[in-house]
Length: 335
Ligand code: NDP
Image (cartoon, rainbow, N blue to C red; front, side, top):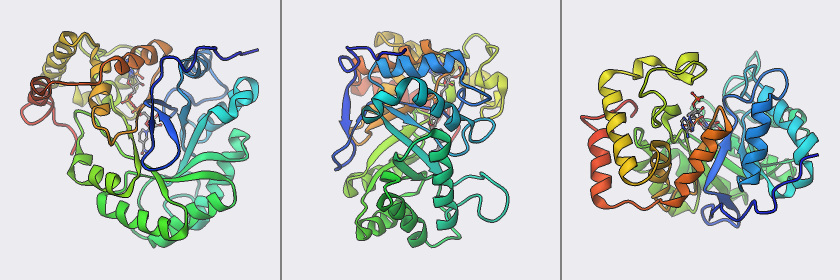
């Protein structure tokens, strides 16, 4: 029988999510990769329980996480049933709908029909009465935003979600979504965008909108799916995301990119950090970022990543050195 560690809150730091009443751990764990399949693997169970033992109270899911789609939620439901149920009130569990989940016209995007049916399915898979956060996973240009936001509001009013969130919406879409949600009486709690040293689109207006609107920010893929770690400096390890190749292409592992990763690795070493730790600390350096949402394939990686919290301050010289390798002339792989 699992018993959570008594000292689980001693080393985690928490931040207030925008201008809400909810605190999130500065490091949260996502179940996009490595938690799917037919049954909960031993390593997935270890990652989840050890994470909770270290104060990671927030676990992020989506309807389609697997493979197969839905299986990450089913497996999370298993660990809730066997181990984490007594701690439900200490957990912030999120899920999303937006990407393709089932056949036909009602299985993706942003209609009320899809979002509310998907949330019911997610709750069933996880064995939950409610999730803490329900997200619109992507902006739907073909559906009135009033309808999509109305569905989030309805989910909250029905008691199936405590808070509403949006993911990967642009700055203008975010402002509009926030205004609609506010008018409905269900403020937008949080935005989930991609953000890393290599992918800085949020700096082009989104973070300003989030600050103005009092919306929290949880940054996904802060390690650029593993590129911002030392794991590819000596080739492509078996079982790595690049070796599996479904969401991360080895095309990114060019000589020039790897030379820049090696240079970033040295800057991290000078700071007394691993590259993963520095990459996470870099995202957390901005006070508008509530939490970094990491993924992992084994507990050791999460343990390493948690070390980021020991030093999230950067000198101007360090920031400039990072930019030399992570921006123009360095690695520049995303917008
Ligand atoms: P990361 O950028 O943190 O990448 C995680 C991968 O990096 C791991 O699987 C592992 O690769 C490697 N890694 C992690 N920590 C370390 C370490 N300390 N040392 C060496 N390698 C390490 O994030 P993800 O891309 O996994 O995204 C995180 C979460 O964000 C997802 O689970 C999901 O919840 C959310 N997300 C949301 C999206 C959205 O549209 N809203 C889209 C994408 C993600 P390996 O597996 O090769 O070992």
